Image (cartoon, rainbow over the protein chains, first blue to last red):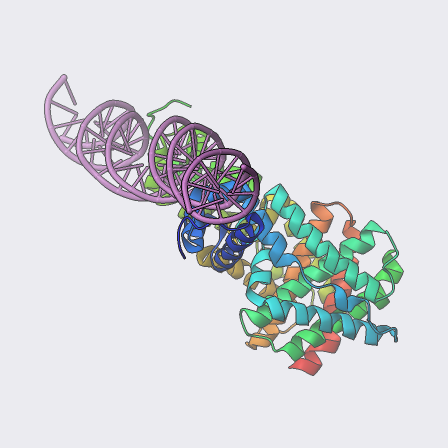
Length: 197
Length: 197
DNA sequence: GAATACTATTGGCGATGTGTCAACAAGCTC
DNA sequence: GAGCTTGTTGACACATCGCCAATAGTATTC
């Protein structure tokens, strides 16, 4: 990396951001300094602030990038019976998580800044997207019931924890995770929603 | 608070720790400085380091305190059929969480240091305790199966997420949370464990 | 192709946070 | 009240962060 070389603002911003994504995926927030980011990107530290403002704003961008997942496959979900729909959405979720594995898990657990209102908002939005996907997959996407969405978010939380047991701790196989998540979601659909809503 | 006044080491340590518990319960890790802790405790900043070493070690103690919950009630769990046992353990969990509400939730979501290996270890141990309690309540406490315990941890993860929807976001009532968690646990017991283990 | 304008990039300043340690002094013992 | 123990202080050295004026690539104009 040649110092002082000029890049298009978009390109430079993208380059610094990709370095930050890697570092924040490896270490928690307080252990990653803007100096580290600048050094690995081969630029002066001041440039990081120039493009992203503060360290926290940079981290917010990183979390946004990490949690942005392709929602494409959702459109062509099968329209079969509940078990088939549940199976499809769980498969989709496991594909997404396993593809982004470390960085996605690091972000969703707020690798070092949980409790901060801005960070929490970004994470909540990502969980909301996943929760809405689940509701849409089972044919409840149009409902605006807050309790319904709260339960869907709780289910996504379980899915996240389960993914950690699978991908980080390696105590569960993908088949076991799949079985756990499909069975649980079906039970919620059949026995909780009818009673509680 | 009179500066320079001598206290028994245990008393002084306890006093500083209680201040730290309050502050780390209010703000995430990076936004609480040791200067803040020292000021609120009415002591010199150096004394914080004297008693706890580094800021991270202080935070570790705080998380330990926040996550230490009374395990007493577990002994006198009913020995009825599965639905009764599940109902009892869920009730116990909700009682614990609602009693410690903010600080417990702040700690279990690692208010600012998730990803750090030491912090993660403390949190994992607390989740393990809860997961073991669940397994013990349903009569599987003696099993050492790692997959079993992994699924129990995933369930506890769902329980914590659900508790947040209840206590922090107020989109679920206690009754709804209770129904969601009992139904889910029963489904796991009846349909997942027999197949997967 | 040299002069010019534009702006991406640098490097250092001031403020704040952290870990360490020698010096101080509060309170006990004799 | 002298002396000892040790809880406590205050300051030093270092690292990190936000900021900004100065610098130097790159394109543009003639």
